[in-house]
Length: 298
Image: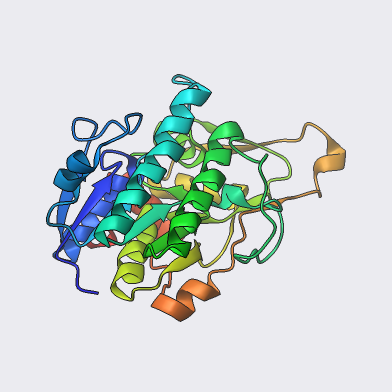
């Protein structure tokens, strides 16, 4: 499909900021739906949504209430912002025949430590992220319901997203900040614990590819390879040529019990809309360290 203008929620967040840059690189106008336009806790009338949907070719729903240590969210806020708003959005999008993209996550899977996780793997209602993680699963079911009734939709399940603009207390940002300050980076053994880290640019690029190819459905989105916690720390120290890595062995028995997290299989996305990750972990950290959003900016 041809994309000239799309609306996005969550534009001020980490992924939303990258999404705006990718839209600009693809000469697609962006209609930012901020809290002034739509507080996701509020149910919008059809007339109000008509104004929001006016003139767009697609709707990219990134916005959500995300709890943190400094800003915990109660269950009502999480439900209204992350589930009820999706219902509101899907109902109107179906009525107006406007396709949507919903950003879900790998937390919907039961076996997050499994190898080569495909889209049909077992799901869970009680995994990483507590009730917030559960809202991703519930919202997917809402989108699926409307899809069965004719809604054109893409639901993406990224592995673990990182990039400039993420919270300072999150692992990747924390390691970079410590390296920049020439501080110690302490990691608990086993240091070979690995996670699939996908740069936000690759997620944003997947959104555009899926829409242009009208690849309606649910897709995993992941980086080409997994990254060990030790390698992540090492790459951060190499960027600044500073910092020191300390491996904390609390229990010798755990030294060789490494885990793998979010090892998603993205062959389906590769097949249906030619998705391929463009940003390696080293390049992604470099982009992030330079406070940029795209490899084109450095």
